[in-house]
Length: 444
Image 1 (spheres, rainbow, N blue to C red):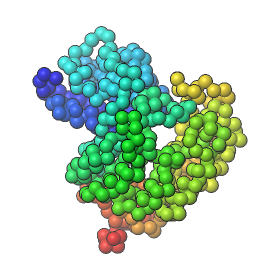
Image 2 (tube, rainbow, N blue to C red; image 1 turned 135 degrees about the vertical axis):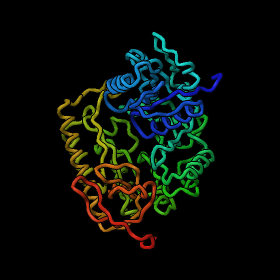
Image 3 (cartoon, rainbow, N blue to C red; image 1 turned 180 degrees about the vertical axis):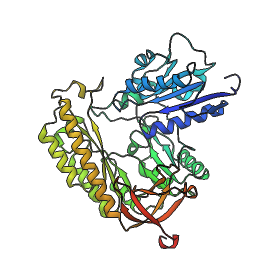
Image 4 (cartoon, rainbow, N blue to C red; image 1 turned 90 degrees about the vertical axis):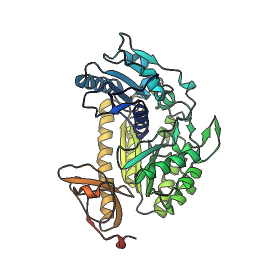
C-alpha cells in the first residue's frame, strides 16, 4: 500500500483447527503493521476476515452465518474469506451475499495488498491460484490470544487418504527451517507465553523444503527442547506411523515436551484402514500406545476416529469400538463421516445410512467420556503443575496440567498465565478436576 491506513478497524473469525488459529493471528499482525486496529468480531469493523475450514461439516452454512453476523454489526464492512474452504470452493463463496473478496491458499498472506482501498464492488473479487502453485512455507504463530501459542512448523500433506480434502486445500508437504522456528520460539518465550503447541497439517512429516527432505521431526523436537524461557512444548497431532520410538523416548526424558500425544486412528478395523489409505494397521497403533505408556504411565493420549466410512459394517464398527475400549487411551475426537467432493471415498460403494452413522457416533462419544473420566480418576491425589488461563465461568477459572488434565479453581486474577503446583483432589460431575494449591517445594 502507498500509505499507512489509520483509524481502520479489522475483526477476525476463525473456523477449524489450531493451524488456522495460528495463521489468523499472523494475518492480524499484518493488519496491525498496516495501521489497522483489531476489534472483537461482535463489534463494528471496517474489515472482517473469516478464516474457513473444509474438514468440518456444513462449511457453506457456517460461512454464510458468520458473514451474516458480520454485516449485522457493520452493514457496509468489507468481507474477506480466506482458508481451506476458500481454496476449494471460491466460486461458491463468491455467491454468498455480502462477500467482497475470496483469497486462496497462496494469496491469504498477501491480504493487505489485495484489500487495497476497501472499495466494495458488485462482483466479488477472487484471487485463487491452483493449489500446485502453493509451494512456499509461510510461518505463523498466535500470540496475545491466550496463555498458549500455536506455532506452525509444517503445512500441506503428501498423503492421499481417500476421505480427505486437505491436500487439495493446502498443497504439498513443506516446512520451515529449524533455525527460523527456534528463533520464533525464543521470541514467543520473550513475550511471556508459557506454552507452545506445535501445529501443522502433518507435523510428523516435518523437514521437506523445496520438494526434498532436509530434516526430521525429531531434529526439530531436540532443537526446540533447548529454547530457554518456555516451560512447556506440546505436540498437537501426529500420525502413528510417524511417531517413532525415538520421538517417544526423547519426549519421556525431555526438559520441555509434555506427556501428551494426540494420535489419529480413524478406524480400529484393518479393512477400513486400507480403504482409507491409512499408512498403518491397528497393530502398529496398539504398539505405539503401549510404548508411550511404558515410559510415561500418566501420559494423556487422544485419538481421532471416523464412524460411518463407506463399507463400514456393524461388525467393523464393533471391532473399532472394542479396540478403543481395550486401549489405554484418554479421550476421543469422534468424526461422523461425510462425503467430500473430489475425494475417492465419495465415490465408494456401501454408504452407511445417516441414522447408523449417528448411532455409532453416540456410542463413541459415550466411550470417550468413560475413558476421560477413568483417566482423570487415575490422577486423583497426584501432584502436578497447572497453567491457568484467563477465562472465568460461574466464578471459576481453568487450567491444564502437563498431561492435559483440565483443572478448575475459584477465579483469581493473580493466577492467570501462572504455572501453579497443585494436588488433584476430585473429579467433578461435569468432568473437570478440583485441586488444592501446594507450596512449590513439594513439586520440585
